[in-house]
Image (cartoon, rainbow, N blue to C red; front, side, top):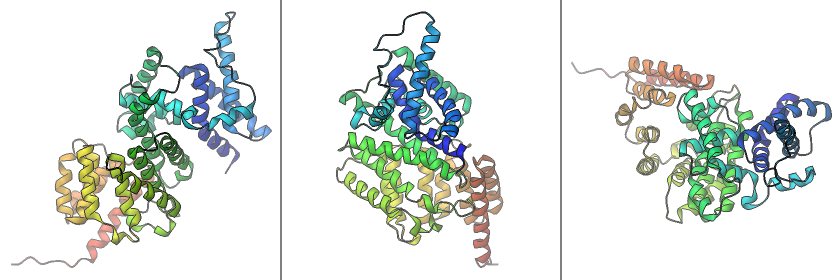
Length: 424
């Protein structure tokens, strides 16, 4: 890894801790962001000359805090400094800062930051969007892609959310037990989207994006420590672990996507799978099913299959049916159609997804699946149109290559099938 790449990676990984602490000090999202950005610029100038600090997050907090205080002084000119309850009297010792970064329970700065971003005064979509921007530092483009909306719409959503937090006088303290429970769903959704942003990548970017998945798992484990008896948080944590366990097998040496059924399952992380399966079993024993538990149960069925042919697609179809009832969504139905194609055939699956076209007209995976189903049915011209649309909507070169690979596979399979002569 180059020096610049190492610095960028260290800053990215330190962002949640640093932003959480700086927000606690300055009690203003914009001020915290400005302080963090200034600390990053100083890191780019300082670290190559002086070497990496013992704890990058603590260094960024220390430098950002001082930079923020200087900015307050500059704006105030000759006015006195704010009261101590407005600017924290954090000690200057870096070691003391580092000691608090991963403090237990809800004193954790990251968790405090999550709960502030997911304040109930904000609509759910704004809660998640602003948390993705502030906590994880995702770009507006990345967040917009996760929500399947345009960049300008997402920019406005984030701006409104930040303004609303400022205008509402949201207390910059960790909420009590009742408030924590009320906000838990929004926080869990935000963690889930952070993971998806790291998971939805191409082979070349996968190593750089892996920290997003790892951070989401860390946050999920943190939530699980706070809510030890909550089966949905068990399900969320299990889902992330079971999905990330497949990371080493998801791309080939050329960075091309490897389909789940073709993956080398010996590369899957057995440690993560075992932890995830244990959490799934523990969650289901509570008999309080929720969307994360159902998705985790689906992932568990894939993980338990020693080879692709052993996958219990009938059970997966039933679980997706349950998920459709809990969380109706065209994307859920699209995913269920894959299981239906395995159980009932391509024609049944195609009939299921055809009504979704208008709502998923800008969704890459819809046209990829539609093309595959049409090809299986021998409707090659229609399939080619769907595949062309999928390639046009691809977010990465890997997605486009995946569609071309899918086309090649189906063409080869079609060529191997004997031609059936119609009766005359």
